[in-house]
Image (cartoon, rainbow, N blue to C red; front, top):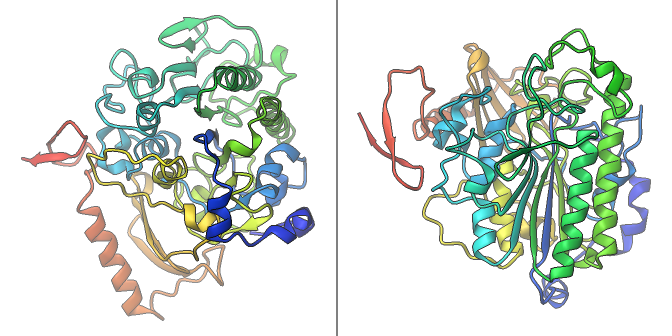
Length: 461
């Protein structure tokens, strides 16, 4: 992935942060955490990481003022499974709801079990004010929802999409608003991205005024379809189906991302106005690779693929005083790493009743430790896709066709080295199979199970 190094000049003198200096600048109050998740934003869809058709200065600033992780991955190539991993710090395949790729429209009898601890519940137990603004997509009321899984407040939509103007979540645009305040549907006029940004700014100011630490999940729906820019309200009235394959354009996509960037700018301004910039961790990433109008160069593939373009995502983290501006970390990271990492950053030691698959990458992003080697695993039911990443190597299987790629030399995954590295090929394949044996099977397999209170497999039949 290519970077405009001129954007890092201001941080050249601060690229090394020692353990002692990091400890010395540790804030006395717990840090606020603003976790910003875009929807279907490709790994190169911001100008800092390669997009040239438009500019995203506010999103870019999170990276130039902090650290970029070019080896950042989503846990899945579609949205709701990644959200399960983000919420739990675990591979989504350990939970029944995480096997849906993605969870469909209601009524859907699966979701994130309220009894399962989450990143929000851990922060809430630690005295944080917790709120989800934006997209939930981990199960339907009355059994599942953000306020049942650790969030004190919720302002947003529950399904995987919504019209940006009338806020309907019906695929045929029928029905009224599906915008929620807590567990109640509300009516609001405005472009959805703007409504989410404005609410985030309001909640940041309120937490600062009340002098309480804030954990905010700001999960935008942009730039997920329907393809509606902020000036397209009249045109949106003529869209018959939200999943409109006959709609959209590069210009519309650009306008949606510009609106997203503008909203992030208002959020960052709210942090500054509240006097909390030096005590706030800001994360920006996406739930999966890009779709249709996205830019994923130098990778191939898109949303729904386990090729790099389907799972690589932009990953930027800012924490003034702890993360040196202009940093780049080569640590491989995944959505499920944020639970242990952010809890560690806040000094929170949760009472974990289950195994965490994610790792704490705080030492790597603060520059006090070198990247650690690890193995990352994926599977995706569509086209029977399987993948494992280890160092520069990636083993992959698509519809029974198997590959071994050297990503350090072949980022487009063109040269299959399976016959040149037979031992490594066999090792990685066997490792994936061993890992997969510890995960739940997909629902239509001949398999039944029951779950204990922590969401783990309790017994097999």
